[in-house]
Image (cartoon, rainbow over all chains, first blue to last red):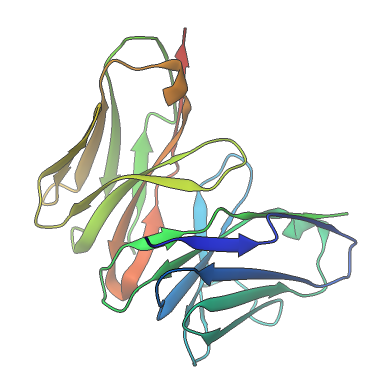
Length: 116
Length: 111
């Protein structure tokens, strides 16, 4: 149990376009989902925390107008990279957590974004 | 602000060696500490999770310890194999349900 999927697994887009990444909890309800970004040979950095039905909380330095997060249901959160640029190329990973604080976060397999 | 540090950043060992990876964190107010494995270009695989009230967890050839008061954890890998080659990340879960990751240790086990 506790499986999280991401779609797409890999995406290549042109500079200036927008890309949407989906994160789904397949067999549990996730009140909280997290979005991380990982640059090559670096660790994961938290971008934002999203709670179902409310606005996401963004970490310092993350532009909320550029990285739009929607957590419309207890099993789905989406991250839209708007007007993507080459510097947005990265590995984006989501995680999902059940109801209780301190519960384990279950990670998706990640999405590799390449902006040309 | 919670900071997590992993030492060494990279490690290369011959097959069969026992090895220890280190993780330290600055704020001891944590819910748990987790060790992950990440293969190149892939997502995270959870290896071991230690709750703040626990001292260690074991899974097969892996043993993780936690000393919350000193802000340290170790991951012990026994009888290393080439298939263990990967990046190992530790992460602490703390206030706000945030996970803060260390920089990782890149492990290479040579046949």
